[in-house]
Length: 612
Image 1 (tube, one colour):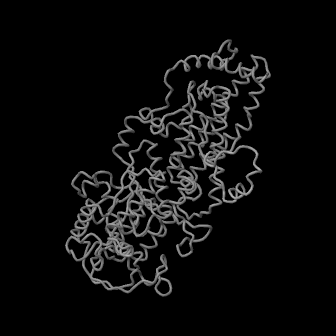
Image 2: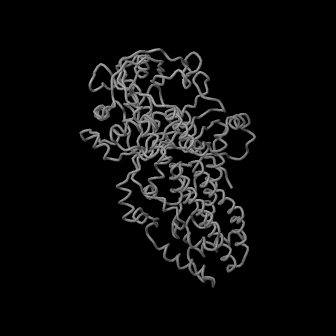
Image 3: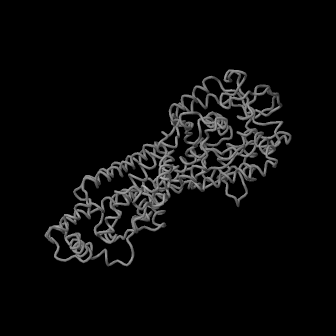
């Protein structure tokens, strides 16, 4: 009877307030209630217009943030290394968009070369058919992983070929291309000649562990040695050009050891772009593929030209690559651009490799990670979060399924998902899922708001510094602080105390309880925005639970992480799990073996959440 009476008093007090207590907070609450509950449309949060000044908007429009992944080689379907680079790039692009920047996120496929022709022949298809098939597999995977790229360039696109030829001609006219015979040891997988001093026993490539073959060709060469001093000066003046800093040390060591001119054409490879002044040769893969970062900027409907493409956003703000292709991006590419009279990218960031269970991956070992299998089994949010959170960006990272499941369950299902679910449950049970006070008022006099604001600022700085793992950690700390706050305040027990007290005392108790729920839900709103670069689908589900539309979610900017977005009168959606707890193989086996021992009804796996 006491509990029932409490429920009646609570609903009466908050949905039709009368006889307010003699306190400024309660007076402010009841006044707010009369206004907010009379509104016919749900309140909205900050819009883009209020997030930036006219000057900031103009600057963002005129100075785009151009971000690139490598153009992935289509000799085989995408692997987890390609997916990791692209997930990280997408997180960076989404964060920059939250800052109000005009982002151009470029990815694509590199489709010329000897390996492509060989892979096509092995599958009884033409090179063009092979490229179409593999390139589409990248497009499909990027969609499944929620990759929001702006440009997808294929090096077989006609506009790309036109820009490559124009670039080649410009470098040639500058006197930096000449013809010569070349004889040396050639790695087919790297598609480059190797110095004997860098090879392993039996002339094996240190990357692919396969013997290099002796070749002699009549090729065109690029005068890389001419740019040794300009490259040294560039790195000295701009040490941030290559990141992390230990990658810069590698590049400086390569340059210091002496740069040699390199071959930029192939006489024995038909599948490629013909050299402008010699149709019997094709342009070497790097002098072709690297230009994709510029040709991607050319609009499809316009006549392709190098100048027009460059004016659309070059130079790039960030090249994001694996460390195995650092030499090409940090040495060859800048020299090529200098020769053509074009600006250099602002930064080249080389990240590390992935291992599995502490071992290097390889098809021969049977321990590769298939990104399609991962995303189908665990979902895009889990895959994106694990690799961004658990791999220190720049270094090598390791994957194991047990660790994957433990991390994702602990962070997304338990800490974030459970906090939202139990808070919304209490609000539904006691307040008809309606906020009765602004979050800015509810947080007055609490230190929790200060904690959240400090962690949000830390996340912002970490994102800007490409410390993606640390940014995730800062956002997770908000949910950890929220869980500690909830456990310390124990609002479920305070609701019961309110029911046992007099009406006046109950109002005071319940007011504090409702404040606590609003505070936690405001923290969840902040988490949704701050984590959206990494887990966009999960963040949208959180926003939807908080009563917002998809348009409102996509209109959010980083400025909306400021405390105070939730307003009194906002109606929350019905509580639903936002992230299903993943069962390990052992848990699944135990559940199958002993189904009769489970007396309580269990939700299907897709709906399981950790309850409070």
